[in-house]
Image 1 (cartoon, helix red, strand yellow):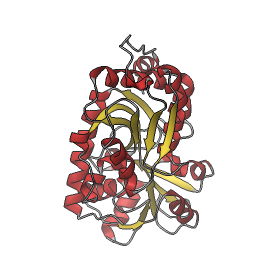
Image 2: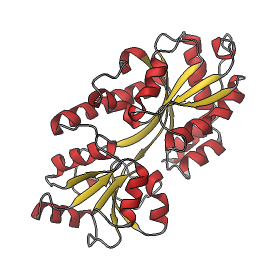
Image 3: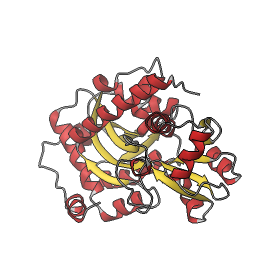
Image 4: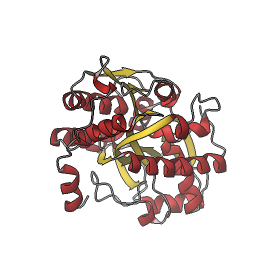
Length: 321
């Protein structure tokens, strides 16, 4: 991240003197998370909650509604009244779910309002330290000479890591075998015993194993190098062009929000994300590169991610577990 961008994002963001809305009228404001406690999306919500409470002058509570890769939480917000009391904190699965879950129960574009793009993080392509793949070039050579022999593990079918590697194989002209696990915990256990040749996941999942040297990063799935691991090349740099697959975390509201309510929550999120202590905790241990983008930025980003996700799912006939 450039010095100018750091300075811009760190600058104080002042909430306009808007008319008090329903945000402060009827009890606690809810941040609904479609995943169990302890995951990255839950941690982002719980990090933001006390700061949003201080900024908005109302209690802010985190409510977990796990299920369907985050879709149950998003559905609850899509069906909520647009009174400023109910918001969703979502993960990258939000851009994939419309193409994997036939009866989603809501339309992302019609029923939800983008408020803030909290931040992003690439997936890492890693190998176990015992695997004889010096770098990604060696991986490409091996996968082209012996297609469908090397294996890679992810947190599951339809995950961003799965989509990124499907796209990478098409763009890079190589073939490896996908081994889906059921979440980050099982994937880490598999990596510890070197069950696969490769693993694709975010830094959040593999931070401890990276620190201990158990896994070795070969590439990142973003278009630009990752600030947390600046010496690790992008896929484009190692011969696989056209990939920019980043996990993301964001805040959404229901459709039909009054302009003042939307603007107030948008500004509150950005003000919270400008706080040094918040930015530091998002960076370490979560490995998130803070964006603090407003609703327009998040809407544009989400449209781009949905276009890519839909295309990759269709072209590779990807189905959920």
